[in-house]
Length: 116
Image (cartoon, rainbow, N blue to C red; front, side, top):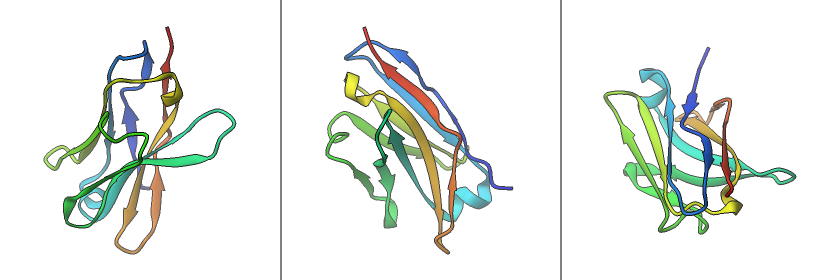
């Protein structure tokens, strides 16, 4: 059973920072493109950031300049550093692994709430 374990969500004031983590097995981590999505209340799930081929990172316009994607291959973990958080960033954030055979695996989600 494939498992993606997210952590790092919480309550933060506007302008604050959080770092989300997503850990998985070496098998999945080494053979998948890892990405982060989010789903705000009453809205659909949207891509926030993700690794594409050759290790390049893609960012949604809403994330550019504020969020940074990184990975630790030794820990089989991908991170999403979020700075300058805004109320509109409030959502459940999900980690996704897309394998080379285009199978998708999702984490359970971690809540991020930006509020004063």
